[in-house]
Image 1 (cartoon, helix red, strand yellow):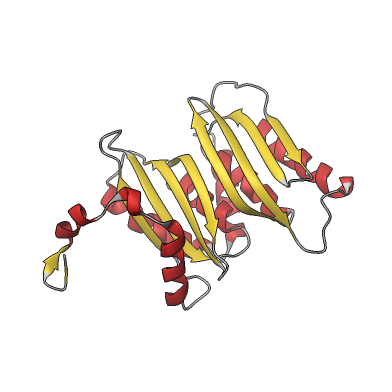
Image 2: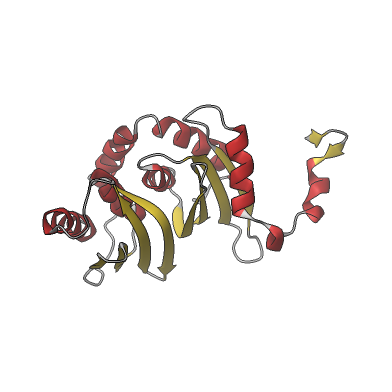
Amino acid sequence: EVYGDAPYDSFLDMWKAEAFDPADMAELFARQRNTPQTLHTLAWSVHDQDPQVWKCAVMAPDQPALFATLAGCFAIKGADILNAEIFTTRGGTAMDLFVVRLPETDAAYFWPAFTKEARTSLTDPHALATRIAARGKSPLRRQPPPGPKPQVRLDAEKAILEVRASDRPGRLFDITWELALHGVSVQAAKIATHGDHIHDIFFLQQAPNASWRLSSTLQPLLAAILRRLQTE
């Protein structure tokens, strides 16, 4: 309700979106973190566009499958990711910025529930993946209409993955989880939803002992991503 003697609402006019610096916030978080599962969520609404559309910044120590896990948590909670960006500091702190459309639920309930889900899922991402897979096979799940044939392109020299496909719940998790399973980290990303399709660009990094030039590494990864995208 209050910070010191001032109510929280009194700080709203002091905050300016154009002054928001994700790198500064991530560095501040890095100095305060204390456990591998430390995670903080800062969310704010965009009421002038859509009352269900929110922006949020999720800060956590960088770790394998972090981005995929957060995307999966949004899917489990019924939120649709419209846009996403990733920042990683030299100190090992990741800040993932999302624009999401919330389900028809109270935002005051959604964000604490999402944060709890994320903190739990970071301790066992595979359990989250199992839940998402089970939900996708549920007979109660509404099947989306057929979309355009998915396209996946990987620039091996620049380590850039580009994906175009029809949109559906959990799509971002499908892509990023497959990357994580193949030992590929997402260092930065530009996620965009245009109507009923997505155009996502991922800037990737493999383990130091891996080689982007090995077809034995690339072909199974691309084939696995395509299989996920073709599974409606």
